[in-house]
Image (cartoon, rainbow, N blue to C red; front, side):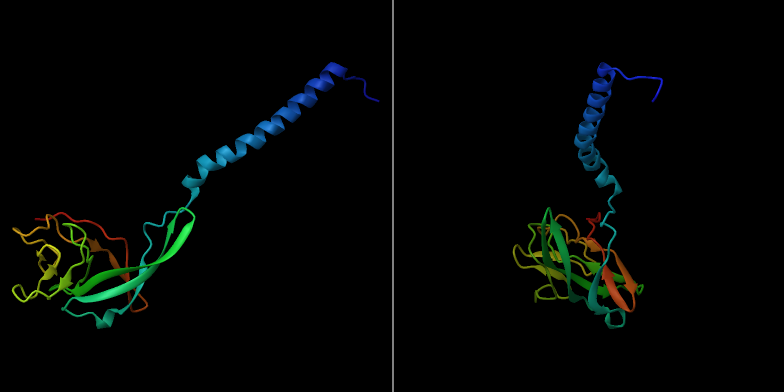
Length: 168
């Protein structure tokens, strides 16, 4: 037997403190995880999405490229389709432009307006963009088309998240 005896009061105090601490830990752990989890989670913003377009097939003429990606909204995941206008500029660099007009969000097409050849044309309000995506002054769009960052992997084109750019 131990020389140090525990009184009933001390035993009750130790037991209640232990049970209370265990219950407090059970309540605090989910709160701590909720606060820390977003910090530890990796960010998807830098991810690139594969397109079916081979780098060797890209020319000076803009071509429409569709690509698919999974979009997660809270607990709902859906398969979405994105579009980009892709071409090589005079310097040989690959340019990928968003087809969404900066006026009211309509979709622009390449070389469809007979009065303005070799330009991106928005049929909703007759908006015009130059080949490089810069908006034409005097037409409804007030900003240039967004640009997708691009990279090459295994001979195919990959695009990132569209980024706005400053311009006219």
